[in-house]
Length: 433
Image (tube, rainbow, N blue to C red; front, top):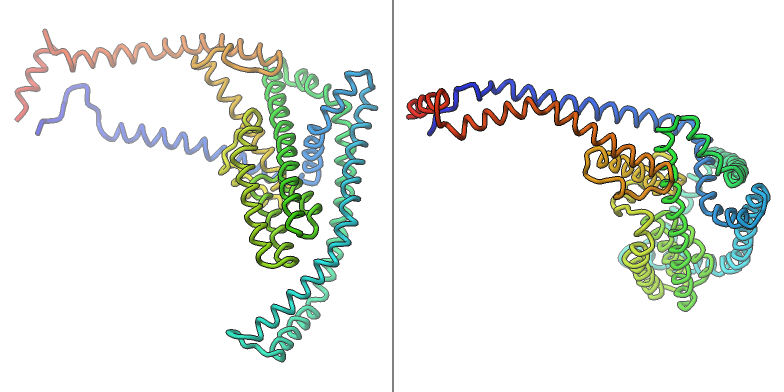
């Protein structure tokens, strides 16, 4: 057992603990400020959701239609005519798909409803048999109780119906607003970033334009990738359901396409509908085959399609995607679940850009190691690299006195050779038990 060093190298434990507590408090204060700021921003976003949602939807739709608009503008079309043509073609395609689905859905829904009625009869027979042994009188009593409960809630149901009508009206207004905003984004979108550059100043503007351009590329790549994945999933699911003789195969394939824009969750929802229709229409055996079909397609999507197609667009862990969808759906409902992944991808792009700038300042990378997408981004990277040289020199100058003091203490502790250091070393040796 050795005696503790009582020379000038030791300090009171309370000072060490106090320094640790101050550092922890400083970081806790910063995190608290960030959390409060994030909460306030989310609250403001929820208050302005009626405006923010059409704006975000218009931006997403613009990422899909911009390649067509850009192609037309490069071939001499005026900006307004190119934007209007792209938008009209998209609406025609969407209306054509829906008009193609509608007759099949109406025709086959009758068959599904009749088979569902047969399924209810079979369920009643199962309930009347062992082990439940409920006779028809008891089943009728339960049905009467359910009917009286529905009658008692008639006013509530009527209110819900009027609320639904109002929701449909709001949806139509939102759709029109999205279309108008999309037209202006396609027509005048190339003017927005230069205006932002001029509004914020040269230095900040270069960073903002670079970040916005990266976010645009990432979100547009995500939309195109999910559209391609949705097309492939819809084809596989649709052909599988068609060969298995499941009704509404085409409608379910289209549902699978749209569900692909909500990663992870959308596939399970679309697959659940397909299994339900197969179970009601074709029985348990076909439903089991549909489950197998959905699982195979999901494995193909998750292990082959998405890793290959999204390797250069969105690199998000499935856990992050799932948490984003849960948070978006909890705060903003179904639209929040749809927009969760593009918003999360945009936030990740901004954080990666910040990390890149920190690495430039720290000297971990050079401007040549970055991959900017704008000319301003290249200038900003070289400027931050130069700022990093100056900052690191100042940090070394500030740390030099403390470093020299620490080096002297280390030499005193490890090299007790002559003079006073030797005397103190001998005194410490004598005090040892």
